Image (spheres, rainbow, N blue to C red):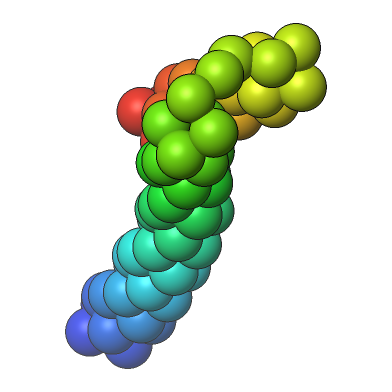
Length: 75
């Protein structure tokens, strides 16, 4: 009886671990997407040689999102 209980507990823990790994990978993918958007925005700004209010606002939003994603990933 104890062996069956241990086996089922191991299966539960493995399922939980799999879900956590999957969730972490999804969060990292989202974070990577935000970082790529920040990089592309910086490149566009350099190409145009100016910092417009549009780019300032866009970067502020992207950095805020990236920071929130990093904080969530740490938790």
